Length: 462
Image 1 (cartoon, one colour):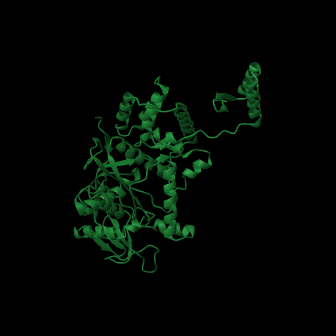
Image 2: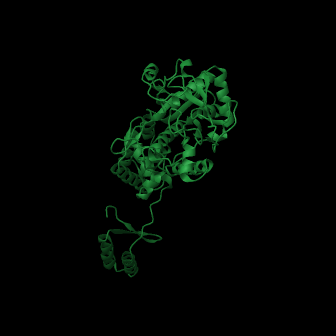
Image 3: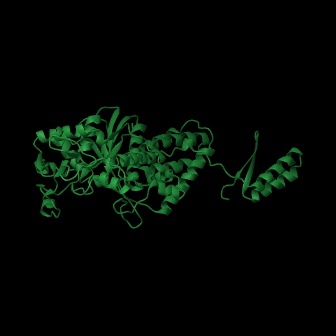
């Protein structure tokens, strides 16, 4: 048995993965804040998490996958200041916060489908779990980790000696060099568990609580919902690298205060997608591309998945149109080879073993793709190659089995030559038939004689 080894951000080491309750794996992934469309930088993280999930399934585990939808409480600043992104998005769109949450959630799910990302077992919206979040805050309060200010209930990070371990934060240095407007916060790293609604306005999203009318902080939803569906300590928590120092650090603090655990046994993080100039793709910068942007440029969304497969998830990836174009051409070659191999036979055991070894080496997809092309170029019978690649695609997720070549539009003049050739063959004028075949070939097409009649298609490289 080839062990599955994953890089755990919490311990900063490669560790062998074993489920806490085999064969089931409990996995929580941070979902989108649905105030706008997801961009392809966001979606790189979801592709990485999908690869992880597929690798777990490939290893014979079952996966209970929970993903949250943040539809309240995510302020425009991670320092618990600014406006709720949902309320700001609603004002921008001229709709209610509830309406834009529904719209952008569905758009996000469309993007997952386009990229062949497996949906989670459980979707959980923050607004559907307000009571769970209130109960979690009360638990933290009872343990003595909270204090009240004029604008909310805050977590006192000074009371948790392990605070900041995930991101290896220099807490003393942060306090000494604090340049943020702390308001009534006691320490720069303290964060809101519950924010009060401003007295002079009514928010679209607000609820009663033991502390007053308001809304939950951003971090509490993930601690509360993961505990509800997976328990206070589960196998794997994932997200983007930007979550390490704030969001995931605060999730751990909340759960450690309430339950005494670090929330998850493994913490995995995907790294940023950058634009040509090395700038992180983000909505706030205005520099981002959507899946729809790629489609408008004539690319199959799975070409972007192919692009991501050629990089290690723990390294930043530079997006270029040339890179995407190369991935699209590679995907096209792979699809055509797979299609032309005919019916599958039995997979090759040696290739399957090699594939397991590379994907179990911390999801090493560049090596998995190198092995895939090695298989394509091999001398194995086509039916064996097809069965083997079909097995690989359980992890690659390129949906090769469902791909069909696009219907070609054959010019009328070529169809006329095919018709004349067929007539010549029927009259046994073989030389004329050969001449017509050569004319068809010179125009860049080839004719295949089948029991159902002649088939014509464009020749490769024409």
